[in-house]
Amino acid sequence: MAKVMAVLSGGYVDEENDYVTGWWAEELFEPVLALQDEGHMVGLASPEGGKPVVDPISLSEEYDPEGKYKKLYESGIADKTTPIVDVKASDYDAIFIVGGHGAMFDLAHNKDLHAIINIVYEHGGIVAAVCHGPAPLIYTKTKEGRGILEGLNVTGYPNDQEPKEVVGLLPFSLEDEMRRIANYSEGSGEKEHVVWGSKQILTGRDPHSSALFGRELATRLTQREQEKEDAFFSNP
Image (tube, rainbow, N blue to C red; front, top):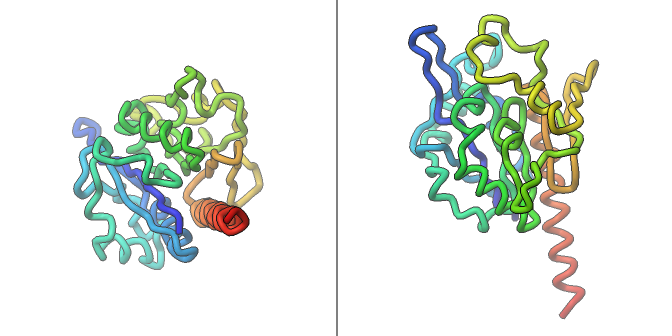
């Protein structure tokens, strides 16, 4: 069983423009379900801890027609998160950053999160992010000063899918920033699109890719756990 830390935006409010955002429901729940199906344990963290703000649109009928994610949200499983500063990164085999526009506001430049990402990475763990979740990875640098995504194949939410009414409110373009340092792939024509940039870096394009993203992460972690077990028993 691997231990995974899922990191959520605490939420962002722009009262002047009547804009509220946070983490995206499908992008938390689908990967968590996939990880749990494989027997892995998932913890939750956010900048301030407690109950982070979910993007209300992600629970709307348009994006959650069957009410699957609303039911999971209302069950309270995402009500308690650990403050990022209190996360002991060395305890985890992987970290994944949940998408939603909120990640661009309070996770992108969060130094404590950058440190956690680096510790997981330097211990050989997997660093993963879906949709707008790669925002903090763009600005995470290794101890050698190299960008953690530098030169890798990556994906994330594309410019042409951003709602026009939101674009002017965002602090930056995720796609543009990813293209600046990495090899960005939109996965045109693919309903689901995920990219392994290396054995340790996984990115997913959008909400529709969340389930595949979760399965890829879960399967890789299971394989790694099996490899550890095999190595242990072959070296008495």
